Image 1 (cartoon, rainbow, N blue to C red):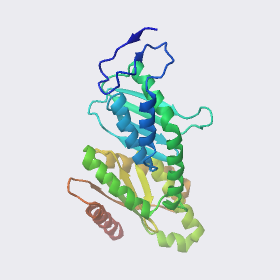
Image 2 (cartoon, helix red, strand yellow; image 1 turned 120 degrees about the vertical axis):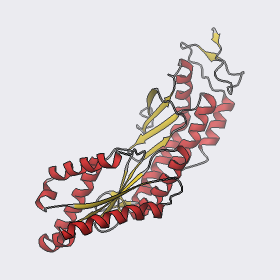
Image 3 (cartoon, helix red, strand yellow; image 1 turned 180 degrees about the vertical axis):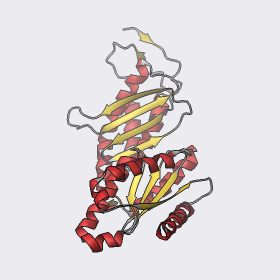
Image 4 (cartoon, rainbow, N blue to C red; image 1 turned 30 degrees about the vertical axis):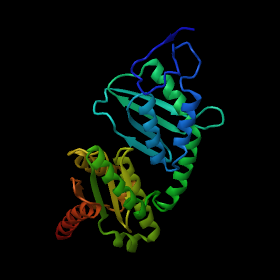
Length: 296
């Protein structure tokens, strides 16, 4: 069988030949597979696991911007500035593994045949650890979930906003925070009863979910107060979300029947700003708008 060389893989061991596409032989040596498994078993947290996996992908292939999406977890790591090419792989859905999620690689050039095969081999090593990490993420989300609206609670918001600031500081991605407060919520409870009030809260949470992207995060941080973290965000992101939000409120029957309205405040993260400052800036804008609403 004829072998081909690949000078791009300077980190790849010379004892492991690069085979042509028709070869079924593995490209990763037994020693390298053991190294990968040891590294992937170091962290049960989804973020830590996928960060370690990205390090392995960079070592055996090349650096990528990586995104992972599943029902119980989301991960994004930007390592390259020019992402002209993108390829996604479904992880799992073979043998004893159900479909665990989708991983997407972005870079400045398409994958070669050998790179594609190495990534597939790395995926097979990732599956067991990923299954455990997603289960752990699912159990953790139960602690962080608001059980009425089925979105994140205050504790989850506080953990997430800190991680979002750290990620923005590291990757220079934009980050925006939106705070929302339902106007005249007490009269809704007094007039229609608390069951109707719960319906309004759940309907508003659904409206918020429909108004943002999958990469954005929604939280109920108080009785009738909600927060949205936009990441990544651009200067126009808040305006776009606000416009979609107004459209979704108009279309929602439960909110329309309750003569629903909400006040909104927002802030854009800047270098050196902490989570408290980011929240206070949005909160001040919200209460300024709420005061204006009351005056009207």
